Amino acid sequence: MADLTLAHELALLGHDDAGLNRLGAPHLGYGLAGALLLELTLAGRLTVTDGRVTVTGAEPLGEPLLDDALARIASDGKRRKPKDWVGRLAKGLPEQVLDGLVDAGVLRRESDRVLWVFPRTRYPSPTGAEPAVEADARRRMLAAMAAQGPVEPRTAALISLTRAVGLDRKLFRDLPKEQVKRRLAEIGEGSWASDATRRAIMETQAAVMAATSAATTAAVISTTGS
Image (cartoon, rainbow, N blue to C red):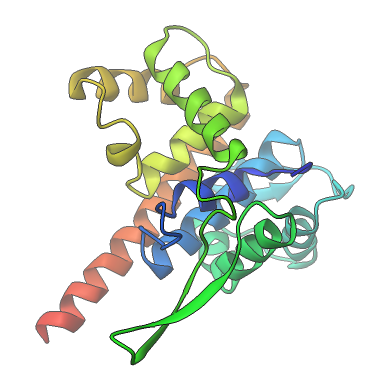
């Protein structure tokens, strides 16, 4: 896939080998929305100033997902917080991202029913093996977690996203917990990006965490009937 974005990488990491969403519907959407914000930040199109998302360049990037998100933010007329855009961009986003991966041949779409009653859609690899682009993302992240010092910006951003949606516990489960905790803090605070970009990434990560936490709390309340 020529134009693989952070959102595409996160979608791949967020599905298991059977092609099922391991995060849950709202959580994946929020993570993907955060991925768009981070990608646009790294591309010099957005920044976060005084806690608000600001457009710094409206030139299209040639990737529909990113260009559509940028156009929505640029035309909105209000300076919103990252958490506001995470909620707005998340709607329908998983389907768009997964459709792109299917169209590119990275995944295939399969529809079936659970217990012959409940419909579901899976997105497994066409070959049964982990897609090469997903394996590359895993390799980059594991190498960054095992190393010391600065991390390539897109890899650092992807690590921050996996942490925000709780995937870090699965991706780095074979590494010592204390090492993971220390390295995540180093990557979050490191000098791998400009101060403005680092602030934007930290605020976007916090926004995704807040959205997923709220969704989890709402689900628990709904289940318990409290």
